[in-house]
Length: 281
Image 1 (cartoon, helix red, strand yellow):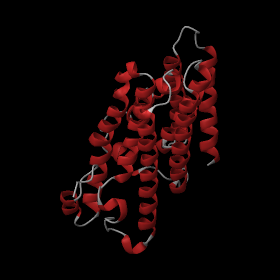
Image 2 (cartoon, helix red, strand yellow; image 1 turned 120 degrees about the horizontal axis):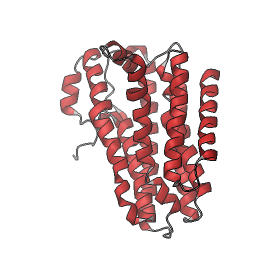
Image 3 (cartoon, one colour; image 1 turned 60 degrees about the vertical axis):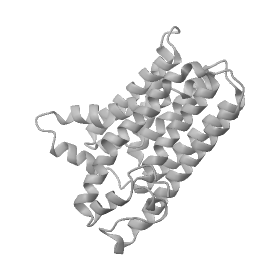
Image 4 (cartoon, helix red, strand yellow; image 1 turned 90 degrees about the vertical axis):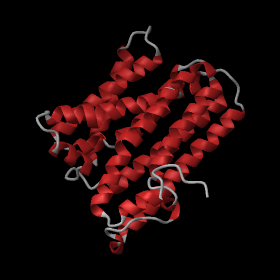
């Protein structure tokens, strides 16, 4: 864990240098993007040193609160109550998700099975390129797209309104759903008798991937905050849409294929239980 902490402190330092040296003419979105990419490159470099791409795994949840907090400091506009609420929800989400990662972290000897799979099937593509592009830089850019609505949410001058209430409910419910799903999965996986079985109780009874549903809903909630604060920034909907594409096109198919290989009856489970949105019954 000390190696991970040290790596992220170095990444934060590199990002801070970018912020300090960036031209005053740059928009805070551009500054944050460049700093985000530089920090990712630092984590990537260190992951190559320790030969473990999983060093990047917590970056997904560590970077957003840092970016959002800096935007709060940077902007000279914005609605105070909305700023506080948005930042609070992002921090709660980040602490919980990072804690969930830490709970399952087994040390530098552990590598995410998906990365091992990519390494084995990469063909002639250099591993460093696969790790940089597919494992680290791509998620960083997708998360940054997800953060785009946070800027208008923090800088928009419209007063707190009914859409903010809806956004609060959606975002908080998303965090809660993801937390419940993770706890239920941890408890299920901890019982040796469940090895090879399918979790089909609790929130997992209505959707095959409730944790992914919660994650996607979280980013849609942030978009609603941005839409409420500054409707002209409606185009930042590309953020939550990118999240949907990532999970639908990559994460869910990967998990389903793995479960088909390891769990008897999973094909029937896929026919009976939807991937994300529960059926109305």
